[in-house]
Amino acid sequence: MESIILIGFMGAGKTTISREVANLLNCQRVDMDDVLVERIGSISQYFEKHGEASFRQHETELLKEAITQKSVIATGGGVIMQEENQQVLADKKVIYLKADPEILIDRIRNDEENIRPNASNKDDSEIKHLFYSRERYYEQLAKITVDTTHRCPKEIAQEIIQHLA
Image 1 (cartoon, rainbow, N blue to C red):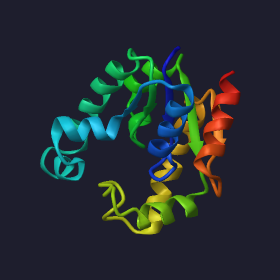
Image 2 (image 1 turned 135 degrees about the vertical axis):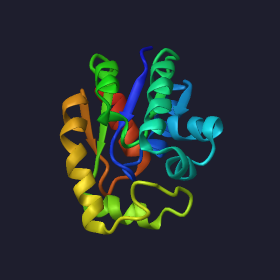
Image 3 (image 1 turned 120 degrees about the vertical axis):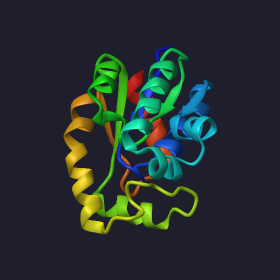
């Protein structure tokens, strides 16, 4: 099995859907944000202390490592912004989990577990602007696009598996 890489904006469901897909395929799962927290500590604190560029270097190293593990990978929302990562993902099974920006903002604002450094200090229009600045990269890199708006995780995971079959 080749790695399956889930990309998408914050709140698109990458963590949840990666768990569902990995369970259905009975394979390993890598949540890049979780691994980065284990390695560097709190992402928001790391952003504050070392800046986004330093964080993105850690993210790129982890992406290169994770794709060799034949697993379902939940990436961070900004992983697609680095040219090096775009090259790494160019020939991989990349699935874009897409959702309406209003839904994404609602999910981000109501997520009590994840504090997102690129959203916590921004108003809704700034988050939308960030989404639109990334959207074309998600679309360009994706081999498959799956809409997660108003859908349950099991249904989304089953659609992904059908596309991959």
